[in-house]
Structure formats: C-alpha cells, structure tokens
Image (cartoon, rainbow, N blue to C red; front, side, top):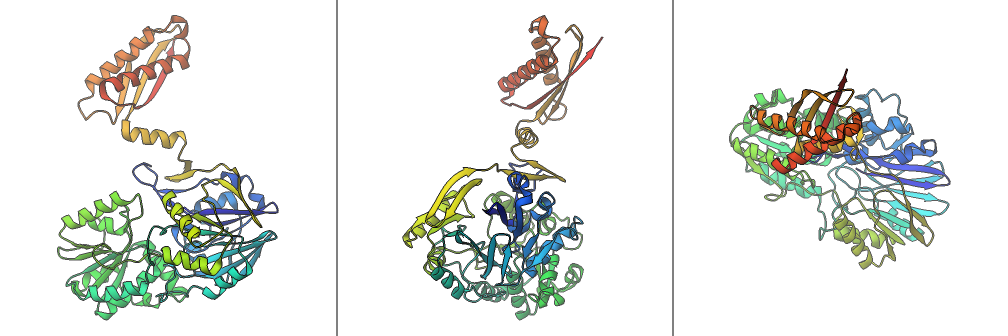
Amino acid sequence: MNLNLYGTKGKWLMVDCGITFGDETTPGIEIIMPDISFIIDRRDDLAGMVITHGHEDHIGAIEHLWPQLRCPVYATKFTADLIRSKLSRLDLKNHVKIIELPCGGTFEIGPFQGEMIRITHSIPESHMLALTTAHGRVLHTGDWKLDPDPVVGDLTDEKRLQQLGAEGLMALIGDSTNALVPGRSGSERGVQDSFNELFGTIKHRIVLTCFASNIARLKSITAAAKKHGRYVTLVGRSLWRNAEIAEDCGYLPEFNDFLSENEAMLSPRNKVVMICTGCQGEARSALWRIAVDDHPEVELQQGDTVIFSSRDIPGNEKAIARLQNRLIARGLRLITESQAHVHVSGHPAQEELAELYQWTRPNLILPVHGEARHQMEHARIANECQIPHTLIPSNGQIIRLGPGVHEIVGEVPHGRLGLDGKTLRKLDGDVAKNRKKMSYNGAVVITLVMDRRGAVVQNPQVSLMGLTDDGTSAGLDGDLAAVAHDAIEAMPKSTRTDDAAVKHTVAQATRRFLQETRGKKPVTDVHLVRVG
C-alpha cells in the first residue's frame, strides 16, 4: 500500500499509489488503500504522480483514487500499459494523462528534477527514483534487489548508484521488507534451474501458482516446461492480461505458444503445466475455484502436483492454509518453498542493503516499506554501515529534509480506505466498525410503538441477527421485548416523550442484558414509532 509525497516550493509530487488486501478483520472489504484526504485538499498543487514499477502495491489504487486527484501519471512503457489496462475496466483510460518515461531516463515535474535508476526486481522496468530540488537530492528505492543474472529486465545500474553517492545524497528512503533476512535474496535464475530439476520428477499435471505480475517467474516456468516437453497455459484473467502486455513490450515472446485452458485440459496430463492465480488464497482466484470444483474449464485429478511459487504475505496465512488443505483433501500433491527452491524474493536481504550503502553513502536513511521490526533492523544495518543518521518514519508524518537537516515537523490526516463493493469508505468509520462488530457479536433491531404521551401501545418487536440458531430465538425475543418494556416503564414520565432518550435507554438495557446472559455486545438499533 505504497504512497509517498514529496513537497517543495509549494508543490507536491506523489510516488506510487498502491493497495493492500483485506482479511477477516475487514468483512466485506477486499481492497484497502491509503486515505489521501490531505493531498485531495491540495490537488491543485499536486504536480504529478511517478510510478516506480507495476506491482499492485504500487499501482493498484490509481484507478480508485485518481478521479479525486486528476494529475498526470508518469511511468515507463510496461508499467504504463499495466495502468492503462486497469483504467480501461472503469472507462478511465482516455481521461488519465499518462506520460511515458524512458527506462533510465530523466524528467522534470514542477520544481522536481527526476532520474529513473534501473534496478532488478521480479517485474520488468523497475526503477529507483532520484529526486533533486534546490535543497538537495534524495534516492527513493522502491522495491529492488541485486540479481546478478536476471531472467527478465536489466541489471541494477551499479555505476550510476556509485556516481550518485560520489555526488552526494541528502537522504535515502529505502525498502525494509527483507531487512531481517541474512545474506542475499538470491537470483531468479536459481529458481529456473530448480524448476528444471523438479519438473523432471513429476509424472502428472503440474499446476503452479504465483503472483500474476511476476513476469520473470512466468519465463522461468515456461523455460523449464519446454525443457521437459510440456505445454504451458495460464489460468486467471490477470495472468493473461499481464502476460499479453509483457509480450507486447517484448519481455514474453513465449506468450504466443501458450495453450488455452480448454486445450490444456484436452492434452495428456504429463504434457501440461498450468500457471494459476491464487497464491495468497484469494477466494475468487482461479486456484481457489479449482480447489472447490467451481472452475468452468479446469478440473484436477488425484496425483496432480500443485506448486506454490510465492511467499506468504503477512495476514494471508489462514487463507493460504485453507486453500492448501482443500487441495490436499482432493488427493493433490503440494510443494511449497519450504520443500523446494521454488521462490526467490524480489527484495534486498542484509548483504544487499549493506552493498547499496557502500555505493551511495547517504547522509540519512529513512527505512520504509515494512513493519516496525523490519524498519528497526534496517536502521541497525545502516548504522553498522556508518551511515551518519537514521530516522524511522510513521504513516502521516511530515519530515523536513535539507542539507544537514532532518526532523519530524508535523503530521497530516492519514488512515486507510476500503473498497466496499463500489464504495470507498474509511476503515475507522462507523460502517466498517459496525460491520466488524456485527461479525463478532451479531445485531439486534427493536421496534417500539408509543403514543405521544410516552405510553407503550404495542409489545416491542425484536429481530435478531447472528445471535441465535434458526428456530431458537423465540425465548430470547420475548426476553428482550420484556427488557425493552421494563426499561421504558422505569423512565421518568417526563423523559418518555423524548425520542432520543427512549432509544438510548432501550439500547443500553438491551446490550446490558445480552452481555450478562450471552456474553455479547451486539450492534443495537432501536426504531421508535409515535402514534396518536
């Protein structure tokens, strides 16, 4: 859920605009993105948005948030094409001004001088971003690693990074994702070699799941499949879409040889490799639908092998375990990264972080993109590399950067927005809070009919949701109706004509009774009808 703002001379530049995904704590919310109310109020001063690379946590929120920003978007061709594909689904493609930047090129946006620095990652055209203003230069790393033999894309521009270090860097804003991992992240070429060996040991159909944007992984899988005389097919709309864009940009010529799902199902089991979406256990993904026998084209058989070529994103462990249990229950063989070398990270481990700091020698490190423990460890590594200063930022903080100056000077409104169906809503708002509360405690609706003088003229009607099993609510209904009636009778007659006071009193009595008898504090709604 990356979104960063850099400001100078009254203008702002946004770097990346991404999403994360909901879990069991956000019922009804599948996609989460940053609350951008601060910059919406200043959108006339937003000079543009620069995208470092095409992963969902860096571009996924553009289609949802751009209508409130309406600024130009700057990206290299492959990333720009991914963005256009997403925008076309919402009829925004012709409204968003997308300016394509050359790989490794420079640009000028308002008071910002920018340079794209080539780096290796798990998706083509990933870049660090060097931003220069009248006050100095900062290096924003985005996602990166040091892969000496990438399957797709360019090598990291080590020479230019060393030059930036020699010229002087005021600050480096750096990826902390793998700061706890010793050594190096490893090369995608090693995964390809592992697939070459592994595929030779598998007799039947191979089903492999990975991130849909990992074009390097698609190439590795395809190369291993070809070596063993197997055909490849893609299962999942996002995989087909991303692969076609990669082919258009020259990164995946193998795309033209892929079979359709139907053709793959008609082929011998020992001649097929299927690449599926769903490595994080997403409920509507291709692999989940296959696991629950709900896919219109693909059906697996006992003895087929499913390979999870990805890491578990924190928070997704339960969903992934549910998916894997369903696959195993169907008699499928499962292989994960704990059993074979089927995944390599796209983020720098400790030795790579140290090497970057030897090249760039910034005055200040701001560890970002990770949890607190990752940021703290990143700061420790920077200190060991004799970086003069470190500052661990938090969401919403305004940090002043200048020659020899770094300090937190304020905080802006921030938070998270959830996509609830087609509506964006704040996750700390009443709707999201009440829905979460209902998912744990249920809900009660009580309807009261009273006259203008405060007398109850009809027994209260009670509706219960998520508190009783079917056919067992009659007793509780009656108890709650009596509780509501008694609460009103206990009120002074002078307050029974006050609608707000009556609703509050009945709701409070209802919650107290359910807490004492059921151990629950449900969402309680009281409807009051006045007659006479």
